[in-house]
Length: 625
Ligand code: 147
Image 1: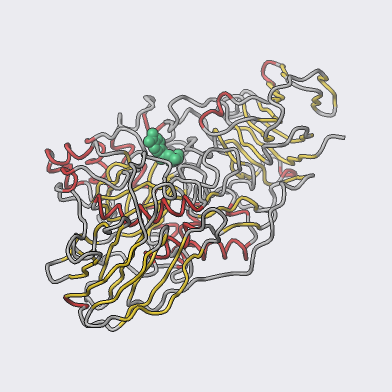
Image 2 (image 1 turned 180 degrees about the vertical axis):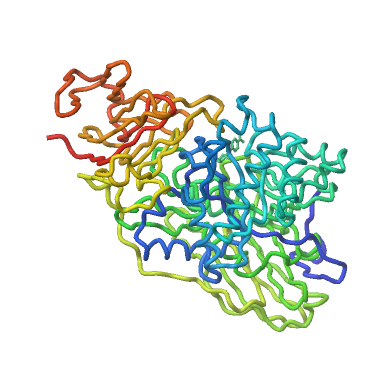
């Protein structure tokens, strides 16, 4: 299907008199999948508030309309693990992690923001011993519904949407069961998005009425701006429920601008959600800087506001969920010389916003899928208004141009109004530009003083975890396997300590099991470090042993193959294992040996020899003497 303006030369017709297109359902971003916001909460409050304003505050920056978060499942889900609200069947806790905090901060700024929760994995018990969440559909549905209920009861957060199992197979019985359990617990308004994978569910929706009834919208990942025809005619809204995932330089901004328009133009996708919201995870974990924004220096306060934030503003500051797209050919389509346009209006049809993008191919490549070649040339465009807006005298103009080969970005600038004469105006469109023409007058480019510069992770470093709240995650320690959270020590003299809290293998998101809980910290380029930590293994549900490690060379799913210098203490067997120079236990040196030359650098870490509790306190890192 191609929608090009061929009539009248280079002309765009904006006309609602023949009817409108689909309802617009919002632009959003994902926190999670996983641990992508980890370092954000560590920022000092003032700077953290600024970052949150750039993301969520209406008429300031990205002004996001949807926040999608991970429903923590104790699994490694890309850049770390996020804690489950039920590590065990007998456990229920709605204070863990940072997603509750983030959702509340988003709602504080924009009470209309929609919330969407999705599991990337599940605690092992949810699978009733089978490592599948579909063996006991009721159990899994209850587990997810409890998260929705906890959000409401504990945090007064209404969850608008929940998903199934990120990028995994779905199960029809489970989807129907989830709908039923949500309904029976009073969450009829929480809609199910199916299924955060690709388009597999479409044929099932077409042949199964009760499945169709259970699902609100088809949420697909990285659709490359297109959708199959049976999806388009399925009667369901179509969403790009995960998209983008691209390095946030100018090409990333170009990717985002192109897909925000063309997901509707080509695919009739009415919501687009970026992975991820904010890249707040250490460099050398996967997908560094692949968020709409980046903040990885909680110790210095440095953050940056890259082009995707301002590209987002071009749509979000001039639309609301529930507005309607115009029909194809009447305000939605491709431009004669390349690029695209979408137009939207509110229900009263007294507001109009038109977003035009002219991203060139090489300057708008997203990480996936492959982008077929196309051409864009500079062009003069005549805009003709008909229907409800035929008599508009002028529109406000917001303009961006992504800077390449040495030219500076010009992002989200207010230009002189565009005046219409007899319903017509002309506009010159260059390359890699975004224009918003709008009747909305509240557009605003928010700004704060330039944040402090970046600094390396500070050494010497120490943490006794006393400044934190029970159930929170420790700052800067980033769990890659297992969960590490603050608990009260059994030994009162230790106050608060960090406990590894996962007791059995979870239902993983990675394609292989991860067996050694580990939390990394610091700088991937560290070579020589001296580490100290107190530990205690509880009698009940204790792990076999603990380790401290240096030069840990990988995280994410490959954590299971991480190399480095691991100093293990295995009290049961009276054994210790060391890869490196010297280690001591209770002030007694117990080894002093040569070390392997590979890897030469990496993070520091603490961890445990398998699942089970272990408590850590007084963790310190310094340069060796
Ligand atoms: C996605 C995940 O859902 C996100 O959590 C994050 O890891 C993101 C990083 O790009 O990737 O998962 C995908 C896995 C495989 C593909 C696409 C997305 N794929 O093969 O196209």
